Amino acid sequence: MIEKLKNIFSACRQSPGRVLSFLKSNLWGTLAFILAFLLGLFFINLTMSRTYAVKQLKSALLNLESYLNEFNLDLAYDNYSTSSIYTQPLIRFTNFELYRPGKWALKIPELRIRNSVWNAGRFYLILGDEQILSFGKDENITITADNADLQIAANSAGNLELLLAQIKNINVKNYFKIQELNLAGRRVGTHNNGGLALSVFENHLEAKNITLNGLLNYPLSSGISRIYAKTNFVGALNPEGSFTAAMENWLHQGGYIGIPNLVVNWSPLLLVGRGEINFNERLEPSLHLMTSSKGLTKLMDDLQERDFLERKGVFVAKILLANKSFKLSEEDRYSSVITPLDFSDGKISVENITVRGARQTPRSSTTLTPLKQP
Image (cartoon, rainbow, N blue to C red):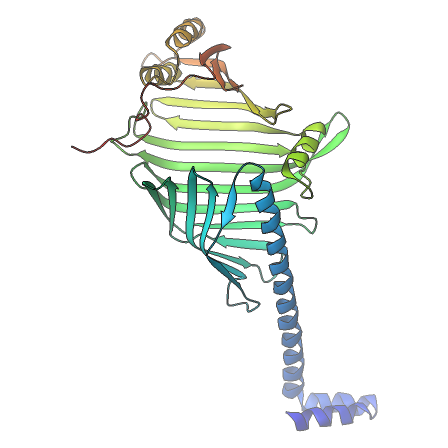
């Protein structure tokens, strides 16, 4: 190969005609040299991009940790390793934890992060087949799933551009199972808000075939066919500085979360709606939905029996709903109704009637925990 390269450089010093004839007679050797040269450039660029991506990730993790600390949350891990070799993950964490001190912790035994060969700003988070959610020292909830991978892509300014995930066969032991969970988000353009162009990040979240543990004290039925929500995050968060300051600036510019489409199919409840989520100066959320549903009063009755909703509020709200409800078919067991649903200041309202106050708590703390088998 070296001799051929010497001959190539020697021929280049001669006339162009001789160079062309030499290349024709040594076509395969020339192509091999060009290919090796291009591959060398590719792997050098790949190594440099992965090194840069590792620096980006470390910086992003530091920013994330500072954001979490504002909400009394934190990150921890036993150890981590980085690699610039493409066949290896960019970063590998052992016993990665997201936790609230003294309250709860989500533990991922092994978290791996890779990036795309063609786009250094696109990352793949591989969560593994099992995670553990713990409350204190005694209660641990094991979560298993197939293909628990998440794709994230950001632009050079650090703003999120793409979010993708499809996780199957999620099993939250002793609580519920989800056959399929889909998540998709992308930046889709701008929204004009009083002459101010605000960026829009569109999200789609869908959970299919949810089966609740039969020993739980749940309302309605044990099977939820589908929950789907399309949301629009209107306005951009500045990744620099504190998260609280970024949220305040986002709100000042008119930021909010729109909900163009919401679907809940939890037999006998069938609900569709649209609305938005706004925040006050204390960054507390308020939700307003305009819904069309069938079986809503059945859900209200079940939640009242479990002391989640107030008896008086449910009684008044049901009277108002009865005056405007209708049946699409004589065979329908439950009536359909169009009504607003609101959540604000810790209160839940139906038809503008408070059915759950801000300080109300169920009489029994066991209503949301598995019952012991006999």
